[in-house]
Image (cartoon, rainbow, N blue to C red; front, side, top):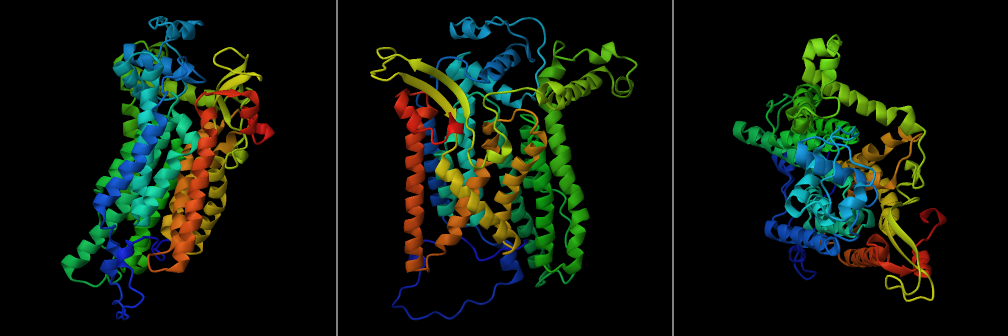
Length: 544
């Protein structure tokens, strides 16, 4: 589970030996330093070209028609307006009941003077606010930031998978598959918070993967300096300052500052990162002393990941701290005898009370007894059992809005994953689990831990309405599992006919996924469809 199995890297074809060439002598066995360094692919330029190509494809797919429909759809009614309040006042204010209609007509400054109780931290809303600052309080303004971060999610996943697989091809494949996933597409074009928390989460994991390489490189450097073949059962150097791990902590803080559900993924990957440290020291020759890394590397890891993320999280509330009108802002002054007020002062006591109120909302009777037509219990997320309806205009009569007839038409935006991709990801995740646990291949642990940590915790909240779009946290890791298993299937450039056959299978699979996405495209983008055409895309009753 800790060490590398056979690499899934795919060296250029011209490195494969000719069938007529004489056999070369076997390469000398790898030294401990060689195994610790585990060099990245040498095609750095090609790696960035591929990364930018798949990222550019994601942008080209997502940008057209971003401002359509020109209205607040689904939960944009909360976040776009909250963002504008933050932009204007530094905290969220209440809006009148007819605010959505007034905003659509161009009358945007209709906020009331009272503070609004909001149930999510402010990072995602500040990012939406930045788009509104640049382009105005309109549908393009509040959707441009989700689009940017949805595209960057493709970029960071490509780089993560390239690093882990040591293959530009496999990294590019992961980016391509995420670019044509329906749920990732829709969430990149809608002013909700979840695409931001997904981006910061994957970025945090990418930093941890980079930290793993950095740490092993420092152990190798230590062996080179001391001219030792290995650590000879010593623990090795203590490396407290690890820049990539600190960067990960910053990303986790921003993820938590967007939505709290990132906490479970943080906990899982923090533990996994320390396990990687144990494996690195064991590989370096620390023997049983490698287990001391659970404490001696674990403590600085806690500081870098947990303490740093908490500090960043608190800092994300700067607008609330800097102003006096936010919700619960005067709680401390009204409760001078409260223990937190006496201990921490009015401001921090008020902020902690706000956090407590948010927690009580998410776990209280109101939310637990709420109902919603698009409720999607987590057991069905990987199966795409119940997509989310973002917007719909039903029963458009012939001759209206371009409907040619004879049937009525419909316009919908459905938050639905590309089914072929999601369904293939399920057996790939099973294979990844087997290769991680049984095959002791560390790389496959990342998608398994990512999916489980982003999915399993939701089962404890199944008494409240949950929605399929929460699974935007899952799909990057599912795609990673598909890409890594594909790399194992393809093998290296010397696999001959086997590689050719596997390449055909993978090519057909990618083509089918792209075709599936293209077929669903009209229901991802609010295109006008005759009602029978829409029904052909509703493969199951639960999708309607």
